[in-house]
Image (cartoon, rainbow, N blue to C red; front, side, top):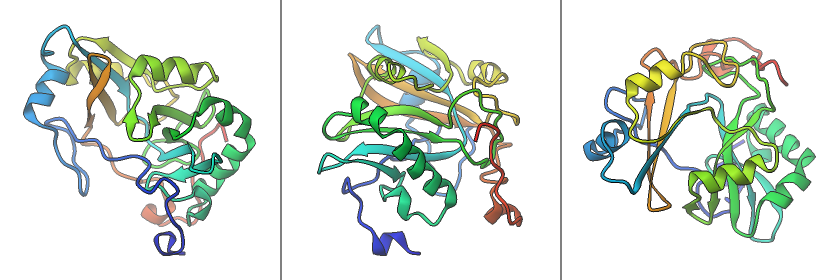
Length: 239
């Protein structure tokens, strides 16, 4: 099924964009590096006291979204912005079903024109997990196209019993080397080495930019049936 032909995007745009890479990070198809100045702010030295650097463990699943769309309804979406129920992939159908089962939770969480984006970890992509929590791990809340600052995001989602990506550092610039050391122990039960980390730089209470580092050993989707030639997906233990 060609969802781009048969289905529209309820938001009118992608649910989540791409994050540029830090120097030395492994680039995938279509990826690009962040600006040199941004890399320095994130990993070496902030501009001044108004910069806050937040670093989290990078998760390896499917980027998905739950949004309150124009008619006020709660809808499960893929990263591209299409209804999850329209996806040809079973894991997205499962996500749509999970959102339906948690509809009251999302209805209380999300205001008008808001969406919560996160990693759907039901199926192993390039990392297997023995999950100690539910399979949806949110990392952002948006009001239209504006990303909420970290502390506001965290307080909101934790109030609804969501688990967020493991926090590695909050405050000063944080080196790639320090992040690589910190992710040797996953906060989410990774059975394979953690692929990397995400840096969020905020300034004067607003999100300035995001960047990330991915290890060169990372192989995209090596556990997916369409990549490894098997006929059955590998599901993580929780589901």
